[in-house]
Amino acid sequence: MDSTLAVQLLIQGVLLGGVYGLIAIGLSLIFGVMGIINFAHGQMMVMGMYISYWIFVLLGIDPYISLVAVAAAIFILGWLIQYTVVNRILDYPEAMQVLPLVSIGLILENAALMLWGPDHRSPQTALGLDSMWVGPIMVDTSRLIAFVLAIIITFLIFIFLKKSNLGKCIRAASDNRTGAVLVGIDVDRIYNMSFAIGAATTGAAGCLLVPLLPISPHIGHDFTLTAFIVVILGGMGNLLGALVGGVILGVAE
Image 1 (tube, helix red, strand yellow):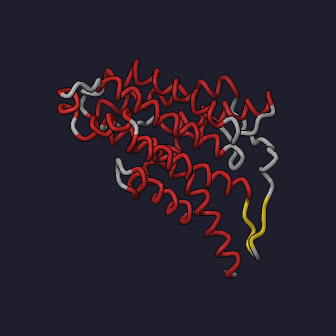
Image 2: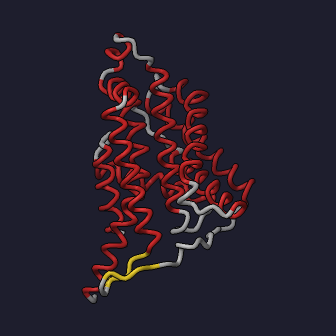
Image 3: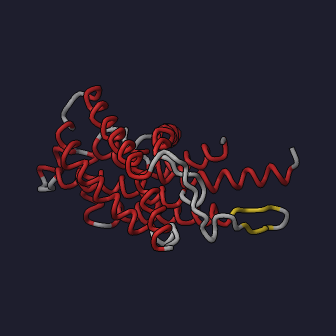
C-alpha cells in the first residue's frame, strides 16, 4: 500500500474514532453510575440522527449547528425512559434487566421505521462532500469537524463531572450509593440525570454522524455493538478510556 494512502486511511480512522468514542462515553457513563447496560443505546442515537436529518431537510439547519437542540431532545427521551422503565428494574438481577432495555430499543427502531420508512437517507450538507489537503494528504472536512466537536464535548463532560456540584454528586453516587444517600444526595434524581446525560451524549454523536453515514432505522444495533466494543477497549466507566477505545476501533476499521 502506498504510504500516503496509508497515512490518509489512518487519519480518517482516527477522526471517525473520535465520534465512536463519544457514542461509548454515554454508555460508559450510564454503566459507571448505575451499573446497568443500556441495550437501547444505538437506537437512541438513531433517533438523534433522524431528528437532526429532518431539521436539516425542513429548516436547512446544518446537523453540526442543530447539535445542541438534538442533544436536548434525546436528553428528554432518556429522562423519560429512565423515569418510566429503568428506575423500576435497577434492583433486578442483571439477566432480568436485559429484556426491558432490548424491548425499548425495538420500540424505538420500529417507531423510526413507521415515521420515516426503511429507506436509507443521506443529507447533502454543505460540508458533506468537502475536503481539504494537508500536503499530499486529503482530509474530509466533515470528519475533521465531527472529531473536533467530539473532543470538545468529551472535554466539557469531563469538566462537568469534575467541577460542577451535580457532577460531583454523580461521581459520589457512582462510587458509593449508600454513602451518597447518607450525606443527603437524592440518588434517584442523580440516576435520572445520569441516564439522560448519557442519552444526550449519544444523540450528539448521532448529529456528528449524519453528514458521514447513511441513516436507517436498522443501524442502531450496529452502533450499540460498536459502543460495547469501545467501552471494553477503554474500560467500563472510564470516559477518557472510551475516547481512546473509539480511536483504536476507528483506525482498525
